[in-house]
Length: 73
Image (cartoon, rainbow, N blue to C red; front, side, top):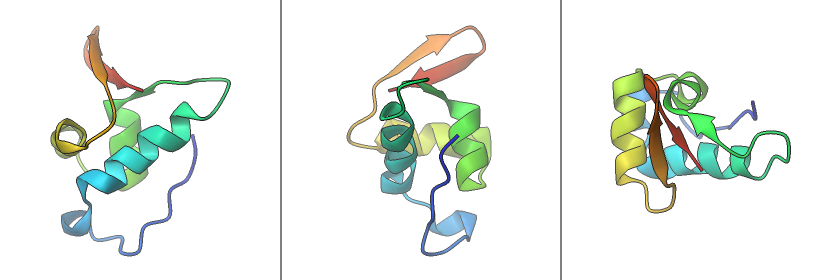
């Protein structure tokens, strides 16, 4: 997992752009080009539900439900 440095660690300040950045950085890793909603939530310090909302609003990542989660790339 790639660490993302945000300007403010307050979960209320996390934006769709922050969620997009997590997916983009993970996608650029050769070993694992997709990332689960739970991983984005952990990286941003928000709930899974909040991460999903942010990713749905983010301009770039595509998502696909897989089992009990959604993966993003």
